[in-house]
Length: 221
Image (cartoon, rainbow, N blue to C red; front, side, top):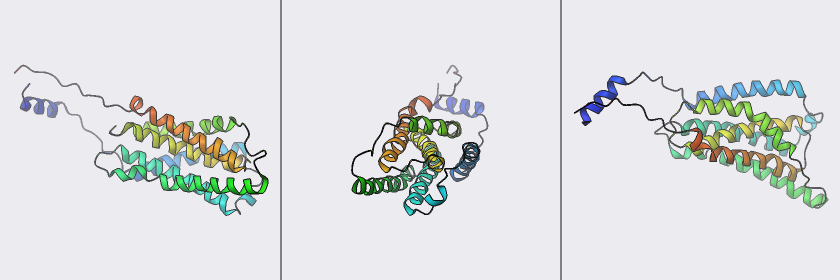
């Protein structure tokens, strides 16, 4: 097929494409729907009894806020990663907030270690993994469906960021009803669960997002 014939065939068979909304609007939509969902979850399970006193602790505020900002920025980065031509640095936007989240947990681990020593600091709590997975499943499915409409130019980082957005938001909400305040437990079982699930999402990127080549009719010539 000659180049002229290929160009003509593509232009003749091209279907109208609706332009995606700006990543900021898509992030706002995903976050709004997810927060409504989590509000319903909290209405069912109830808030932790000591939440009022925990909200007076600056470290608790920093920890939860950093998790929420990690989620929001990861979602925005995932939507940006599916838009050709956007700068590469946008994909790293959630990591400063992720670092603050990690640092707040690390500082809490150090304080509790100094005060009480290693005894009873870390226990087996696989339930955290299951709860975070269950909480974040619906937001994860929603954001994955939304990024599926973009261009799969960076499939692994896109799905990894999308999974990070959903699981970080789930972990932040978990802190509002699950009364677990041992920092080492939070670091290993909650923060660790977020990292593991985000890593799985990253590895599945090439399976979930792939280019679909359009069928081009062939002509003699």
